Image (cartoon, rainbow, N blue to C red; front, side):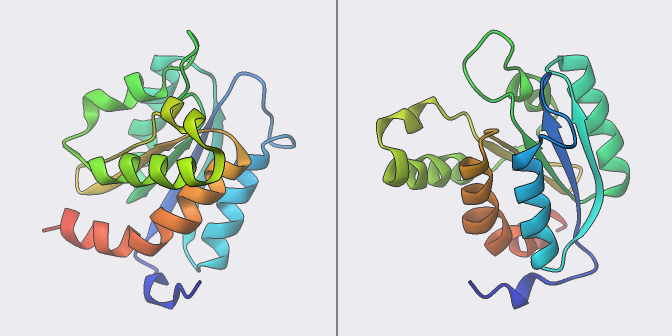
Length: 162
């Protein structure tokens, strides 16, 4: 995968893992995301773990918007009662990137079959900044970042900034 076209000091990413059980040491998906971003030459402004609570997720979002133009939430997108990342972020989305979730589910379907319908991956724009909510498994994080976010982030931010 050639990502030379996205290496830019203008792209600054916040990585926010949503979990009540993970720690910095056990956050495999966060590690995967940060490794892929670093390999692509992108700057990581922050990496934090927040609990599955709407107020905590929204606080993390507001804080990340201060110093990042790309925010990736990992986890809390499932169907359980505790999964609330989508509900926390959605009210702030000014423009949805519907194709992100559609392509993510299509690519997931190719890998895992019909369980892909459970994915509530979300992409959108807030204040000219890209925000993505992706499932918390390492394979899902790798798929979303490597196959969709990295190849398109410069393009997305160019359009979001107009």
